[in-house]
Length: 168
Image (tube, rainbow, N blue to C red; front, side):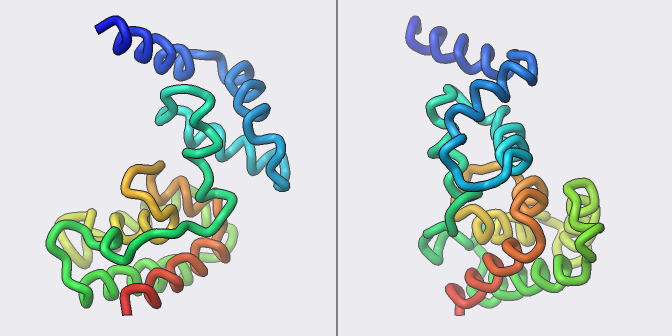
């Protein structure tokens, strides 16, 4: 029980640090990345609520800096078929392609993708799970709206296209 309490103390401490202090610490873990500071800040902030310790930041954010590697079966939400995953990814691709660079912001991505998810299936995981995996290669990560907004339109679309090829 002591170990759990100690872990929870560190987890709560990270979440409760003032933003400026958190960013100073987080950027030390990511400063070797060859990207601009604003990108590092966005990555650090979207990952903050999921971190158990700052030392996990680099590993937990790897997909922001390198194309993800994953098995095809991770793209499948619940009992989806290959055809359903393919259709879902193509719907995500079509939806993201329809947005201008100015519209490609987290809030708008959420609005547009949730609306599309409702249109094609009552279970929003049908659209969002394959999208999340295509973007991150993980089954647990920040949401696809946050990830896509940080990666940007071009990189997000490339990753979805790669997932479509993987499914076919």
